[in-house]
Image 1 (cartoon, rainbow, N blue to C red):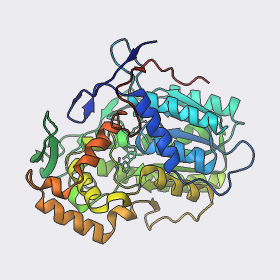
Image 2: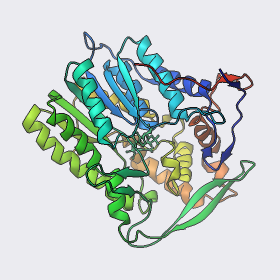
Image 3: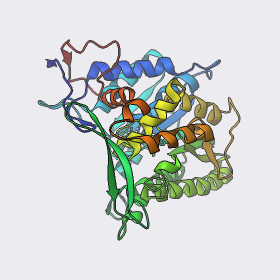
Image 4: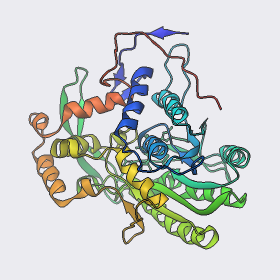
Length: 402
Ligand SMILES: NC(=O)c1ccc[n+]([C@@H]2O[C@H](COP(=O)([O-])OP(=O)(O)OC[C@H]3O[C@@H](n4cnc5c(N)ncnc54)[C@H](O)[C@@H]3O)[C@@H](O)[C@H]2O)c1
């Protein structure tokens, strides 16, 4: 077993290695931060399928699902194993830690590593539901964030882009130099061209979600009252040009339209529901790739401090609504809104004021940069309180067995 002392090496927000002990500790902390349920379902628990379970909102869905809703089932993500030179990806280690939690909670959760967009994965999952989980799925959460998707029907690979639609967007963005000194820079992103919008919609819209539902419905695996949610984001007017009104926003609109179609279909066939869940801003590997989001999130934390609602608490609330422990309250577009704390008028006004005032010289007093930088490092298991980073750790952690 190879043991090493790991120090963070990174280029911008991307780190070369991940720390297994830090990743494990983060998952344990997430479990602690999730409010427990007054009562868990009797018996083995409802059967859930979580897509994108190793990071960000999908990980929060998995941890909160275990603790708050007593789920069992299948969790799918796409992670890299440790190699001789490199550690595994952080999601690999977080998956191992999540498996430990599930085991300790007495819940049968199977972790699959592979491409959720493929039919191969859909068949594998369907077989597991048939053979191991009584042939009945109760919940499906779709929380995949990916740069590319290959359509299994045509073999065409689509690539998503983060661009404004119509005209170029100039925004402020936060970067850090080698020494970690922050700089607020103006960046310009040119408008979507050619089939950029269609490509992005094909990756991050509702096509794969619908394909999953059709695949499982076709095999008769959706239980009576089946409920499904896919993740969406609206966000602030400050980021609207690049996000909600940009290519990714077009994909989210498609996802939300898909929810309405699926909701009608599921209601008719299995007395089920489909919703989108609009969650608040969180520092994740995907979100840090969006121009301006780093600055926005740092300022949001500067305004809200500990009142920012972490993903696992948002998901505790979503599970309550999906399981019926709390009423399901969609907005007029049929979306479950878990972003009220972020989009409250007074919060947005305070962030906008700071946004205007933010320069390289002032940003440290306006944004919570220490928090933001630590959150980025924590995506890779570094800067996690309570972890001894001077100790050697085993990096060849196995993927959880079945
Ligand atoms: N981060 C935010 O601020 C935020 C806010 C609201 C909504 N959302 C939405 O939440 C969803 C998840 O985003 P995130 O920020 O948690 O992302 P993330 O990068 O933290 O996690 C992405 C997950 O998808 C998995 N994945 C990627 N490609 C895959 C593939 N081909 N097959 C299987 N799994 C794959 C990864 O392994 C990982 O588990 C997205 O729909 C996003 O738009 C994010």
